[in-house]
Length: 150
Image 1: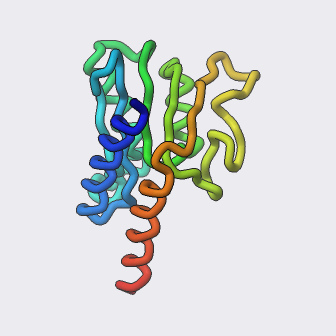
Image 2: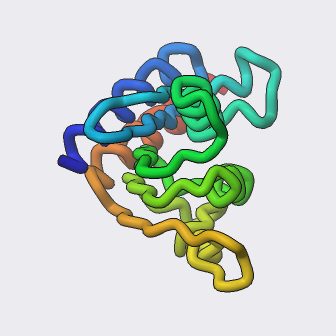
């Protein structure tokens, strides 16, 4: 089941790639249904907070008519950054599934582990590495093309 929804997140990442955005995609799932989608939109939207996770979380909140994302799982192609992890904690999101690890900015275990910090009022259960090779290769391809175009 995780692979099915990670493939939906990968489809979002490919949309970002086509826009010239860093190819990260995310979907929020509740009871087997996608209720939020997002892909990076920072460059196009001139918005430093327009990460795939943030957009998917916002859309899920609108779909549910509230800010608590109870009974939801966020699928994202890259391990989340500090901002996105903070949003997950504040939204009371119970589960995160991510694809590729991010050794430079990932806070679901790579650089630090914000999502299971006992000091916070909510913890997120994390599954990492789902379709990691596919998620990672999309990012590598994007940055290779970006370096070649300069």
